[in-house]
Image (tube, rainbow, N blue to C red; front, side):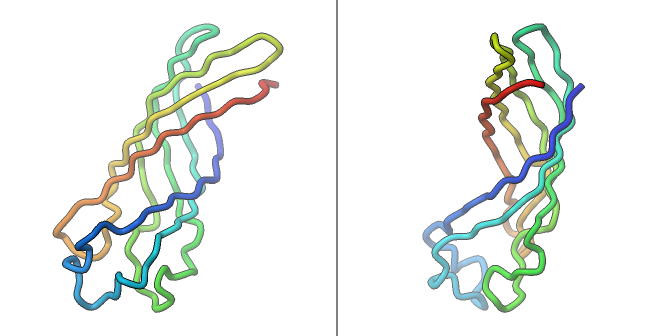
Length: 130
């Protein structure tokens, strides 16, 4: 079993026609959205030098006090729960490489019930094992 603590920054750019979501918001001035998350994955490691990882990751939004449009309008809910699947390959000299794919369960759209926005994440890492 493994667990990590990760800091990540998610970025998104609005698609054309996003003004149809809400006429009360000015999306034309929005260039991109950046959200900071503290992620806590918990997973099972199965295997020897090459391990398969299966588990979940809970993400906590870190910039809750800042508004995206400086007017308090919140689009994204504070937390996100994701399922994860990945691998870790343990190399000689205590080196490792790993990769994970995560799919969110939480609807991140906090504006309307019209669309459901779910997160998808790819994580790639290389480092030293202690």
